[in-house]
Image (cartoon, rainbow, N blue to C red; front, side, top):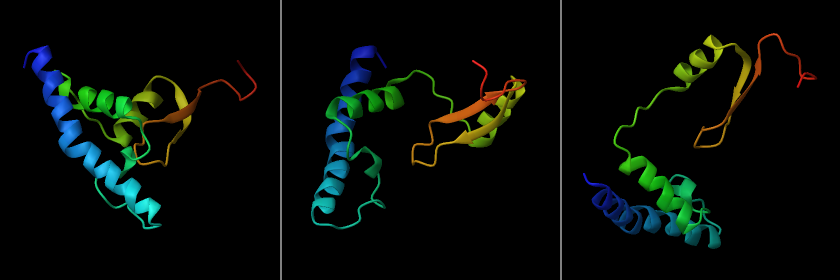
Length: 107
């Protein structure tokens, strides 16, 4: 798809799918109900701009390669990291580790 069309389609996806789900969860939270099981609930506190950027990254990229947590761990261990800890939050996008041969006091 041409760049302009990809952008347009991603914005339609935001308006018709992401925002309705995210705002529904916000509404449920105001009623003191749990909306965490609703799809896309992780977007409930993000700004409109952040949601637009995420959707464009996800659906507008020419090539996206998804990898598992195990594959990420193997890759970072291969380049010399150890004691890798992954985020427990739903996106699981963050990890921290120590470079092999370093201690926590090294910089």
